[in-house]
Length: 155
Image (cartoon, rainbow, N blue to C red; front, side, top):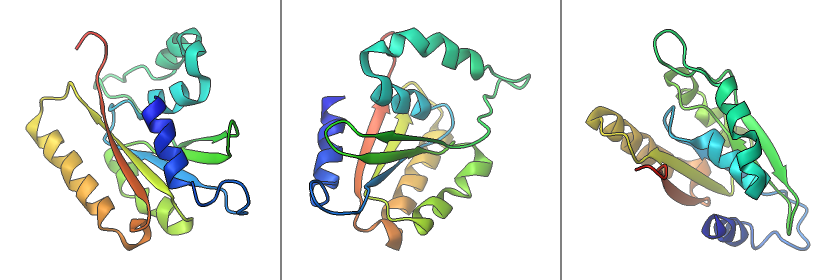
């Protein structure tokens, strides 16, 4: 987590302590990669264990085994310096609207989360394709990028 916080500081470094701009970051990746978990671990820190079960209960799989997240999550972080982080679901439908976020506001950094346990080549290729598209978007040319390979302790 400390490396990710250092990324935030570097990406927003020119804005800290004076600029009126409020740095904005996006957490993106395919569905089930761990984006929401990452956002709330960053927000809550060590007390994450206290709400982990509540968050899991809210995101139970449907009859097809898919977890449906109805929309994006947004959190503001004011410790040390202020920034906002938008986490947008990676379902097929929501991937089509990722561009609305970075076309509507200046994004200072993109955190792309990949499920390290996913062995499905088609999904790995799809994640790679989306990352390449994002890295070539005009609106994100000045943004910092970080790829997080999310693995659970059991992996």
